[in-house]
Amino acid sequence: MSMETIVGQPKAVRLMQHALQRGQVAHAYLFSGPAGTGRKQAALAFAKALFCEAGGADACGECLACRKFEHGNQPDLYQIGPDGASIKIDQIRELQRELSYRNSGASRKVYIVEQAEKMTMQAANSLLKFLEEPQSPIVAILITDNGQAVLPTVRSRTQHVPFLPMAPQAMLEMLLAEGHPPLLSRAAVHLAAGVPACRAIIQQEGFAEIRNVMIQLGKESMTRLAAAMITAQQQVFKTDLAERSELLLSLWILWFKDMIHFQAGRQESIVFIDQLEWIGKHAFQRSPAGWVACMELALETGRRLRAHVAPQLALEQFLVQLQEV
Image 1: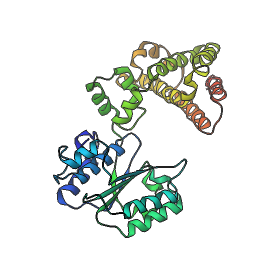
Image 2 (image 1 turned 90 degrees about the vertical axis):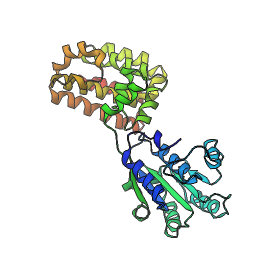
Image 3 (image 1 turned 60 degrees about the vertical axis):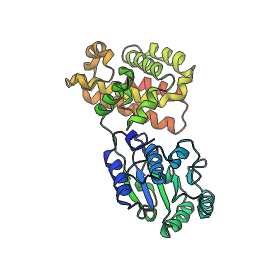
Image 4 (image 1 turned 30 degrees about the horizontal axis):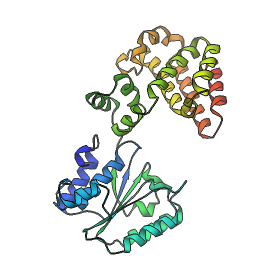
């Protein structure tokens, strides 16, 4: 693990390496950006470089500290995340107790807080006191989807390291160069913000199956509602795919977008490129505004699923409502 493994985040890597090169490492950092952009990977690579005995802009990978880190034997690295729905004050207090003990000989201690926005107010205030009185050998790395959701007083005491969504085409080129299936990669880059998340989606068990089921449902929902209902019953609700209904809907939104891309002559942007002939025959069944309305229905159905509406009820209503657009 090194800075070289962090793809598509040149600004974040530059900020970390400059701090290491100049010996100006801050006592706290806020790694913020969408999930899947490599924030955790970067935090670990940065921590490894902080422990490295070579003292360069990246971990050498050869010294004792690097070898200990690679084998998960670095006692001066601490990681915490939500216990249930939140990070609680007792977790922060326990972290502070651990950090107050004499270290094992390393020049620094490093702690990583994942989903920092989920700290309770009490936990955030407890951490704030720790940040206000930094001990120079201790470096904090807070990871969050949304920096604005972190307590402002905590945020103001950290150095911001932004992780930005990558352009889909750039991610697609990287994934294809790595040998990932083109059709799955073409979909994944529109479902995630970074290459690590794309890889995770592609490697999910059943992702290819979900894509195929969505194509069948996408076609049937436009021409034969009864057939779509039967397909949903047999291939979604009676299988494990029912638990992945949100992913199914996300693919469905891409399906609707493809219709608009075809109408606009942007065939290079079509995600379901293997269905180009079928899309070409049916894209003009609705106006662009009609396809946008279909997307809005899919988004609303996703919100209902997150509100714990039963997947079968939500998706069946979605299929019926599509006929009315």
